[in-house]
Picture (cartoon, helix red, strand yellow):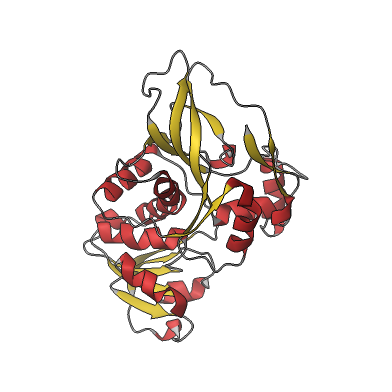
Length: 305
């Protein structure tokens, strides 16, 4: 099968499209013919090992010292179940599914074998494979941090999303609205149209306004890009407010319930996949180059099948 191999840590050019052996599912695994995956901020950080200080040493232990121990990167997928193991109970051949592999990676490929008990479930009925792949990383991450901030327990919470038009931020705006939040989206001038489409109640343009001078206070400050100064965030919080950031050591744990919520929201028309660009697997280097620029809006999808 065709797959993308990461030969060492570095720039996008360390990614090579090649042929590898097609996986054979074990008794409790399903074999998925992948139709789409995505390139997100986590993918490019892993490819380049773009973490600082002591964390870089830790990540080398986790991922591999000179190159990824698992050479096929990619953490999200959507596709069709092609084969099931002899003990699989919850899936059948032909099921349209989507899922997250986390640190097991492996989705930059035509096929993947995953446990039926992993974070995989039926994709939204009304979603294309590209749309299903697009909502996974940002949606799952946003759900994790907003739930960690106790958003469901807050009555009409005021939420500031810093970096509201990236993969995580775009999902966070919409998921916060699901929890009846009043959402302030912080983004650049180029992103304001998307922020409006996502349903933000207020849009603040960081390239035109001084965010530190905002008179409002918020129940939740979610830094969806990991670039907001912590002091700024804390100064903008109400008493008892919650500061969350993707830039810390906390890794958004993958749970099946998160995918089920994303499916419900998409099927109800409450989740815009916000697809910026679609590439093919052969264009994976170009896709990584684009994400590396930091200029993407929403999600970058890779079509495979």
